[in-house]
Length: 370
Length: 222
Figure (spheres, chains in turn red, yellow):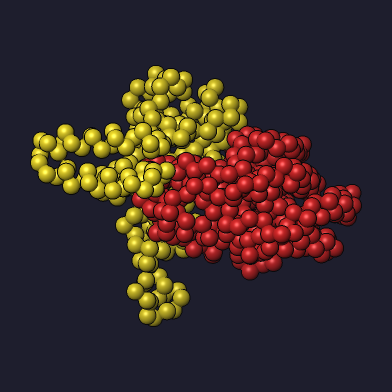
C-alpha cells in the first residue's frame, strides 16, 4: 500500500452515482477498490428526502394518503393498502367484502407490475436488452388497468379509508381476465430468455450470497430474505386484509444469491396471477365503501400495520393522540433496510457485480429517502 | 377525549346534542359537577361502539418472565388492538433486548426502530422497537422513555438492522446512541442544524443558513 509497485494497484476510492443509470434513482455509493475488486462500499442517501413523515403530522388522516404514493412510486397501490388498513383498525371500520377483494386484486396487479419493472431494469443493467422491451409491454397493460380504475398510472391514490373511491369500470373484469389468461405464457417467454442463458447465469449465480441467518440479522425482507431460504411472507406469516382466504405458494431459494432471488420473483409473479384469478372468480357484489365518519379521529392509541409489499415488509406505525392529525406516522421502509446489506453483499465482488446486486435488492430511492 | 370520538363512530345524529346539553352542567358547581359528569357517558354507552383502548396485559407469559428476571426493568405491559407493548426502563433496555434475542423467546428480527417526541414531558423521547420472532411468529413492541440529553444504548450489536435505523433516529430526533459504530446523519446533509421530526421543529422551519450557503438562495421565503 505504501509503496505501490507495477503489479500492485493502489487502493482507489470512486463514486458511483448519484446520477448513474444503474442505481435506479439518486443513490451514491462510495466504492473502495483494489483494481476491479470492491473492498468496501458506503451508501450516501437522502437526495430525495422530502420529509413525508413530518408532512403526515400536519395533514389529516385522509390527506396523508396521496403522499405515500410518492414514497415507493413503483408500488403505490401497496403503499396505500398498508396505511388504510392501519387507520381502519384504529377506527374499527368494517370494509365491505367487495372492496376487500378488489384491494387484493389491485395489490397483486401492482406486485406484478413492480416485479416486471424490476426484471426489465435488472436485465437491462446486466446487458439483456430484449427482456426490457417485453416486460414493458406487459406492464403497460397493467398500468392501463390502473388508469381505468384509479385515473392515474403511477401515483394512483388507490384506496380510501373504508373502501374504494369508485367501483370497477365497465369492461374492467374482461380486460383483467384477458391479461391473466395471457400472462403465464409471457412469464415463460422471459424465462426462456434468461433462466438457462449462460451469460445470465454467469452474471447472477454466486453473486451477493447471504445466508438465511445473516439475512435475518440484517433485517432483510421480501425476495432478498426468501432467496436465502426463510419463508417469511407477511401474507402468510401475519395475514392482513383478507389474504388468509387465498391459496398461493411462498417460493423460497436455496443459495441466497442473485440468481435465486431472480427465480423467486419470477415465481411470485405466477403466484400473484393465481391470487388475481381467485379474486376475479369470487368477486362479490355489494357496496364498495364501509360506514366512515366524515372526520377521521381515531382514539388515543397506536397500531403497527405491516404488509408484504413487492420489495418486502412495508410497515406503517400510526400513533394517534385523538385529534384529526396523526401524532406520528412511521413508515417502515423495506428497501431502506435492504439497502443496508449492500455493503456486506458487494464485498469482494467486481464493480460490474455491484450493479447486479443493486438490481437484485430492487431499491426505490423515493422510499429509502422518503 | 373519548367522548368526542364516539359521535363520528356509529352514533345517531341526536347524540351530539345530548352532549351539548350535558356539557354546560359540568362547570355549574364544584361538588355537583362531579356527580353530574359521569351520567352522560353512562347514558351514551349502550348505543355507541366500544372504542379500542390500552389494556393491561394479564396472563402474558413473556411479561411474567421479564418481570421475574428484571424486577426493576419492566415499567408496564399493555396491549392495544391485540398488539402487546412492553415498556422498559432505559437503564435496563440493553439487557432486556439482549435477553429477548438470546433466550428461548428468540426475537431474532428487528422489524423497526423509531422514536416519538412528547414535547413538554421531562422524558420527552420515546424509543419504539418492533421485534419479531421467526420461531414463534410473535410480534411485540418495546418502548423506553428517555430525556432529550440522555444516551440510549445502541442495538446495532444485537441486530445489524439497527445501524441505519439508529442513524435515522439520530438524524430526525437527535437521539444519542451509546456504542453505535458510526453515528452520523443519514438522510439530511451532515452540516444541517436541528432535528426535523421533533415536535418543536415547525414544518416551515428550515436550516436557513444551510440553504443560503448551499443552494445560493439569498432570500429564503419565510
